[in-house]
Image (cartoon, rainbow, N blue to C red; front, side, top):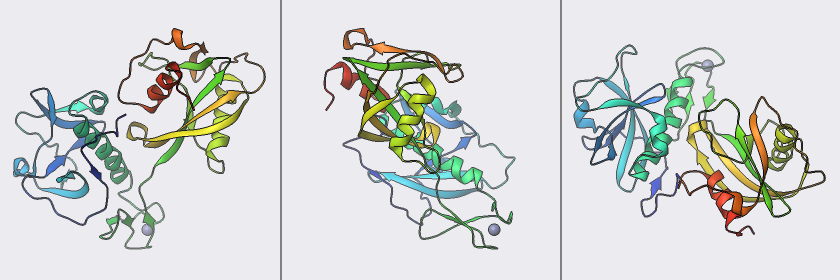
Length: 278
Ligand SMILES: [Zn+2]
């Protein structure tokens, strides 16, 4: 999966540091990132390459001993342009090599969105300032504190009679079959999210809900929680056509998907295909 970068190690501890010349700098513009490719491998600029620009930097994380920082031009109307680099959609992080470099990119984009969307206090509109001890933004006027936002969501493998329920989203470019999924609402447990989402999207009741595994999924700013469960009662699907284009029951032999080394959804589907569900 996208976070599986072993033997590289992701170090997420907050540090109050300034970049040095060889540190990697992530530069985003909305949903694009400044990159180049060298021998088909994704590369980010280092601080040394940014000498013509006056920027504000935030320390993000390290992978092994390599530090990553976020850069913003000090004037908001400046777009950073560097020789040999170009802006690409953050969707490249789904497939680009090396995988640890792609993981750094999408994780940096999640943090970029958080910094970008919290420049001003939601209580009094003052300019927020970064804290020096932890990853937090503080309002100097009313002392409001804002911590990074992660939205929990569930992925659900519904099992019945040797088959698994798979669906396709309506109105999306990706056409692969996936599992039922949805965000947790305020006031509910993850298990309640599972029951609610399955009922809303396909009109089915489920039982024996059991946790499988989690995955950080920065593309939607979420932490995905994977569950398997069993059908409880009728297997007749009532499709929510606003959300889904198709849904149906599939036996292992009917599943024609390869491991994408990316998503928890795909890992769960292939685990079922191998007859390998606990
Ligand atoms: Zn405030």
